[in-house]
Length: 274
Image (cartoon, rainbow, N blue to C red; front, side, top):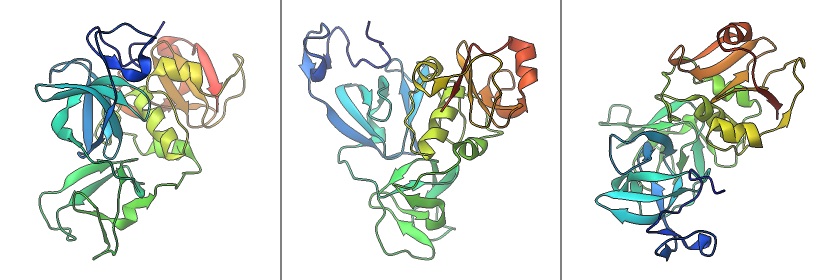
């Protein structure tokens, strides 16, 4: 059975790649767009009050299959997630990124000047096309202003310790569907931290539980980077005894003793090691 979260198909329209696999009134080829804002919100329906499913960060590509009333419907290339986003958050031309944001949060300035206004936020893993040369320590972007160059890394750069990337999010508010530097949910935290190390991960906790790493037997000695799964939730072992996770109990990303989480919700259903 096709997972609707990952299947760009509705009764009225579907991706051409699914012809012969699903039923729809028409099949269309993808029209790729690229995110040109800090984070484009992907929703389950074309309404600002519809549930937030995930976020697409600056520079990500979104394959559009339908557009109406200021909304586009399609599929994210990063993780295959399907949903609706505002059409005005995308550019029609696709640029190959040269750099990525390597810190939790930085800003695009309209000029190579820290006092220039108004700046706009960018989050870890945002993908940018940078032109040369630098001015005043700022890197010029091909599309939207200037970013402090020390906050960027070449697009091929990979972080050695992905848990250290997850630690950057500690203290952020919890938000269902969030994955930018303002708020995050449990699986968005895992996906973003792994991406910084070049490891592709599905978007939701159940998908990650099925796809990432190998299962450990209950009672196994734990280590940094082990993934702990409860129904609908995932956390990261920061050490053998500390759990790092974005959660609705604290409504934050926190580090707490694993024993405290187990006391609240019981032992994890699955433990996986990358």
